Length: 419
Image: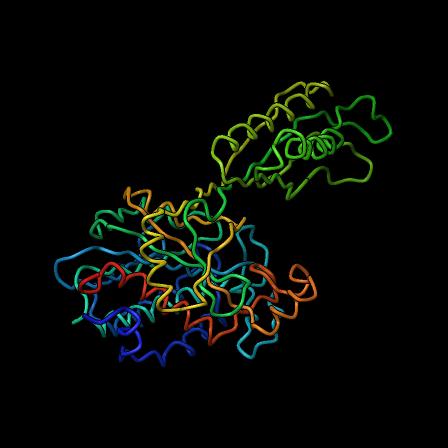
């Protein structure tokens, strides 16, 4: 019985396709819900492996099931949508693509979050497991998910009868590239990524001519007061020992220089690691908004529209311990303990739908010299491109090697003979 690190070292899988696949995917990103060409690229590559592929699950989602006899069922997920971001990396394979966004307006598109690396790595893991069939038994499921960026893709696949298409997993796995020393694999138990929600608040005022403000109920003024008061919720109602974010992303009010509008809209983004704290803050948000509207004499109650819900990514301690032991052997000193990431993911909707444990880890993709120089000068926040920036471009070789090995190693932790 070979150890997993030895299996990976001796694997004969041909991974030569990865770089060209990655560059082609990076050059041709597609927005959430529009990923038809990307899905076709993935399906064409999966045709090289001994697996059963089902497409168009909840949109452009697909699964590849590698049945290799009796044993555990392991699901590994990758996402593959891009962002409405203009690329500024200067890479020879940079995206120059412009498409119509959800609002119908033209927008640049970029893989600014690393989903192209996630997908390329999972395809590499498929190649590795396909080549190592004599060394493992059970079922490996590679799940390729669209529409992560708008937090709809995972739930859409669940609603698309995913449970009827694949066998129930015993464990679900996922990963994400992040700023950090390239090739470093970061894991932790418990709350690892924040829960999130977005909220649109509509304030109903009363319009009037700009010369007669006394005839209005000014929604712009009310909105401005709400923006200020919302910050007091986190600053004065949440313990400094707890984590909470309430950010106002947009404030829309009026279209004329001499008219007080009748309506204003605020869009908020909120993030937490604790469900009870989240509920308490949401009650406070509604209290503040209603109170400001009442103080200004609004004749109609404000409207609250919640959307883009993301579950807390809460890693199972037992899965963490088991996979971390494998990572320590495979990656040595580059297997490290993660710190909480304030970003959010819709990945948990998949294991939650099956009621099974999961682990979601991160992989550093910043060139090491760049990282350590910025760290030495205390400039990590200024000098290191992060996800969703137009300058974010993973360091390819260490990044793809680490992501591919991590996906294969974590899966083999459950599937390899004797493990």
